[in-house]
Length: 344
Ligand SMILES: [Zn+2]
Ligand SMILES: [Zn+2]
Image: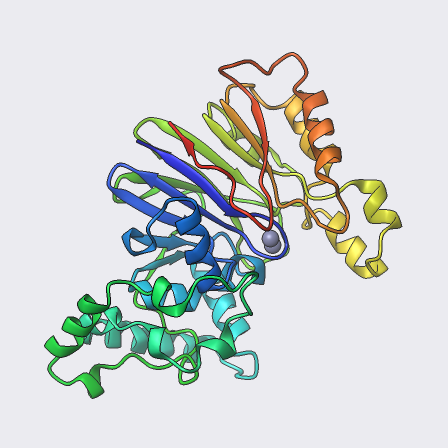
């Protein structure tokens, strides 16, 4: 069974869980680890069963809980190389690195990881630095022990390590960008994680190397396109023959123009590397979308410059006559609570 659950969508955090076959991945980790685990449990998903985290781009609302979550679960993170590099710079903004120095650091980290595979299981769970890096949870319900993976397994792994002190991964303070494992992918080159196939494509957005995805598993195809200034032909091409489409519907143009943001921010959002407006999303749905998806989910709605009803009405108008029991069921992903899981 394939299950697609948007845990959060919007400028305060983005995160989706996808299960397909025996594989379960997170796309983006923009919530604090604690909140992310709490929402997974709310949605009936078990954090300890995640196999990997995949990152679309390095903006904070997509990576906020990344380091803590990956450390806690001991799972690999998939980035493009440029996104990984930008993320590390974001975490260590004061440290100026040449490309050669950065390469050296990545090489060193890879060697460390190879030398101590067991150590990755050690979680940041007991790391007192955690709170300094994580944002406060949106809602502090889950306790630390709730969120932890199997404690006995961690203790055993630590016992089994020949020299626990020597094998300890660096704390967040010592090295905030240390991850249990890093895998690189490139836009335009499909790859697999277990039973899930991912096809990353470039999107126009003001990040180092941002991507959208078509994810497929068990014959189900899901398109993932948020954080894009407009929909260029390569993205239009990708968003076809889908069973599910998650599409950005970020702002209402009038609300943005009349809204509270400074002019420079308004310019950025409106630009070709900003975010997709309700109008642009519905233009795509009316003119370029093939109408095949069972579900169309509107996501990354601005809390300041949009209203769910405006986004919904614009998309409904665009899909006029196309909605049926089998196709184009329209849903809105929210910032503060998970969307019910969609199963195929
Ligand atoms: Zn975003
Ligand atoms: Zn972004």
